[in-house]
Amino acid sequence: MTIVIVLVFQQFADVFATIPAVLLYQAHSGQQLLGGDGGTHAIAGLITALTGMVSAFVLLPFVWLVARSREPKVLRFLGYVRCRPRVCAIWVAGGALLFIAALGGGEVARDVPPTISSEHLRSTAVWPWLLLVSVGAVFPLLEETIYRGFLVGALQRMDWVRVPIVIASAFAWTLAHGQYGGYDMIVLFCLGLTLAAARVRTDSIVPPLLIHSAWNVAVFMNSA
Image 1 (cartoon, rainbow, N blue to C red):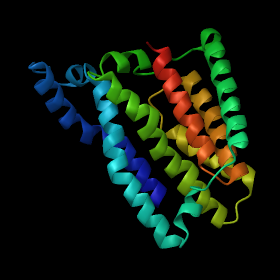
Image 2: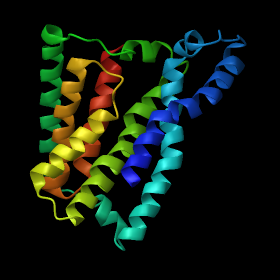
Image 3: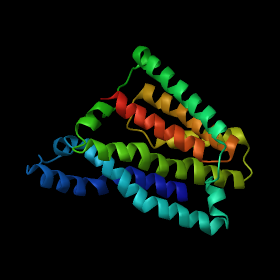
Image 4: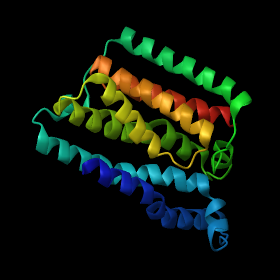
């Protein structure tokens, strides 16, 4: 039930972020936005940045409280434990190789483009640094806590074995990114498998958090 609530809220988080995004844009530029989707499309990057902030502000405490009600050692349950630097480096290197492979495959096999491209998000962010903070730190922290922290921890407590846990975590995380096209969804599922595998193999959320953050920053910089 907790994951369902989180998924539903994530789908509506951009609605909660739209109003402050519009107000910030109008205060910053002194211009009124057009009504309807055209207006919000013009500040899609700013809405995305604020969506991360709003979601983290609401969902991280919620997940923490639910986890605390289930487990006395909430940090260990969520995977917030140390990981050896060498192990982290190996997993991050694997994530980098996947990113390079995804870039190469995208040049050949991109069939359905994302609804909103990363280039458009960057160009409509108003403050690009705010979008960078959101995609490089806030979103990874939020999503890893939910999908590789709480979800994996809950499935482990239900005595699921590793492979189904990895697949379930990757599938749920991919579904939460339904705004992307066919090829991007395949890449996201592969990335989700990597992130979940890192969590399960190391019992730590640190490697997937580093991979996720580095991946998002690389996408952001690649869209420049």
